[in-house]
Length: 312
Image (tube, rainbow, N blue to C red; front, side):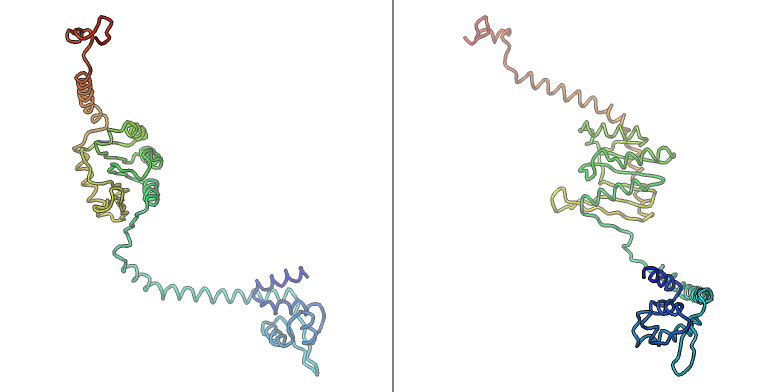
């Protein structure tokens, strides 16, 4: 029975219906069957077997033997299979002609439709911090020629930004451009300074600007991702826009390079910061001295204390 099921499935692959396959497999078991006999043998409802037999005859897979009681027999399997294959070839030829005509007819409509686009289909609006981080990482990972970025707190992506490190190393190795402008406030965080050194080691060029208007990254001169902080809601509320628009990217690249040209390198900014740190340290020391109690060795301190330093 399983063999018959498999053979029936094969015949269905060649174009027969399930009933036609079962009736043909029944017919090859004997020279001639009546309709009632083949219905029982094939397990096909008797009211359907006449239609099935007529279908096999039209396909030239069965032969009708007229008489007082009509009989039916199968053509040889090799002949039946060859006829089925030939029918499939003819059907495929018709489909090929139809598909060619259909492609020609639909082509103009498709081409016309390309000129009608949604004016905002190149803008992605992201509000969830996880979505922002994922899109930012993907933008860096897929960059092929250039990455330009404004970097400033608050961070949605962890400062170490592994995707950014890998992108910097990859683009630098290919002789491409990777540049980042950081706002001066990042120099207050030693951990962030260490991260910036990692990016420099990976091949990224870094400069420090006094102020940056927003966080932004421009990829390959065609895609811009920027944060748009909510001016009304809480400080952490923000919306990120990812815009695929070469003209916008070109305009913002000009703004980037204008700030870049007037900014210090990371090494220069750190060196420039040393006098400030020294001044702050000196100021702290002076304040500490001013607030400290008089020493027992001082003339004023000695008049109120015993020689051992205890209160009089």
